[in-house]
Amino acid sequence: MHKKIATIALSGLLLSGVGGVNAFAEGTGDSTNLTEDIKTKQEIKDMKFKEAAVDEHIRKKKESKAKKDDSSSYIIPDGEYKAISVPSYEQQTSYWCGPATVKQILGYINGSSSSQSYYASKLGTTQAGTDFSLVDNVLDQHQSKVDYVYVSIGDYGRWSDRIEFAVDTGGPAALDLEIYPSYMPKYTTHIAGHILNASGYDTRYSPAKVRLTDPYDQGNRGVTLGNVWHPMSGVYDANYEHFRQAMIY
Image 1 (spheres, rainbow, N blue to C red):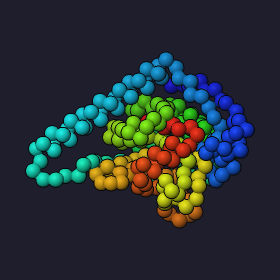
Image 2: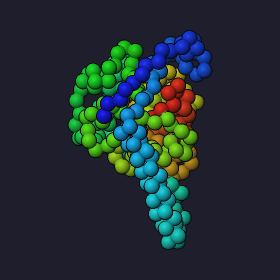
Image 3: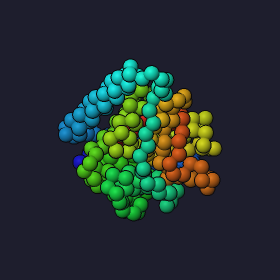
Image 4: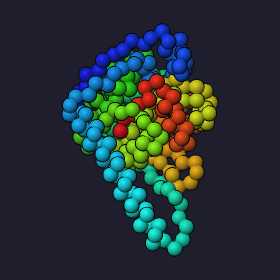
């Protein structure tokens, strides 16, 4: 699928860092270009179909859990756990989080993947980073099992439902985050923009957690790189804080 992408120049307000966007803060390869995701009629149809599929999937899970609860004579955790084996690849440059994330997702779906440099060329990645709005295009062009869609994250409930759906159905979701340590404590400094994917969730206990397959090793500490669990609400806050407020699933 191919989108028409209209690029919108950053305003002076954004460049000054007002409103939560700091174009000069540390980032790991997420372009600060604001873009409009203009969908074709087919893509609009695909998005509506996928959103309906999320509703149906979550409804069936709730019905199944209600039946199990009714038949249980013991207390069970009020939630679920699932993780999928998305391969981890450390980004090869400071601005290749997008190509590394695409490689991770395609490596899981296809069982193999091309080089980060190949995906960087397909994404149009520059030293300014990757335009997140193009990630779903490249994912769709390189596999046929998942129809990826770019959507606004919505509220926490909708966002977490999509994460669960993506993990349950084997199509890892890609996220675009602005990270603060208060949201995701494994990070020690502010990250202006970072692309990575979700590969698991654990809602059995409070607080709920989401597992991210992160291509970035912040501070070379071996703490953020790879499959790492973070507070689910904190990851949502980081996704909400980012000026795009978008996800791909």
